[in-house]
Image 1: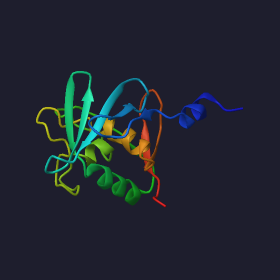
Image 2: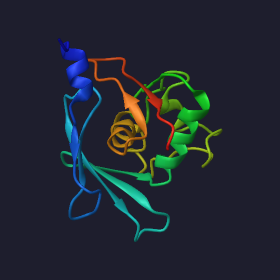
Image 3: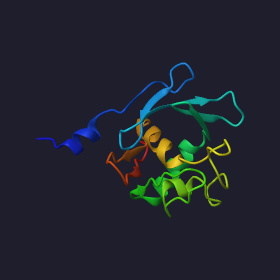
Amino acid sequence: MVDSAEESMNEQHWSGAGTPTDPWVLKTAPLSSEYTIFRDDDNDPALLVCQVGSTRLTYLARAIDDLHAELLRRGDWVTLGAADEKKEPAPDSVEAWGRSDDNPVGGWYGQRKGYRGRFGMYLPPLLEALGLVELEHNARNNRVRAIARA
């Protein structure tokens, strides 16, 4: 018998190809909110365009590979720690790394001032859809860990 947590982990929580005409349709880690992301390679540098209701956020597209590499380096579960730009993220979280001076871009992956946060909310589900991470789907305090590419 499969319990509901295990069943949730086996469900696919996304669709789409990640293009402007067929964006990825994703759900946040708690599976409580739906949003879309597409890759804009026409922009220099390439961006991930995230639409959450009427709010548009943009992140550097290289965040996919950079975050995956960081999670591989850490080798264990990492809390998401999602927070708005003006709030302090949880230490050692995905959110903290996404705005740290020590990450590969030397600061924010988010590109739109005032909307640069929530990296830990919107990027891990994308990495899950791309087969790069395992992501928990609890009501709160979710974590993520890397899957090594074959």
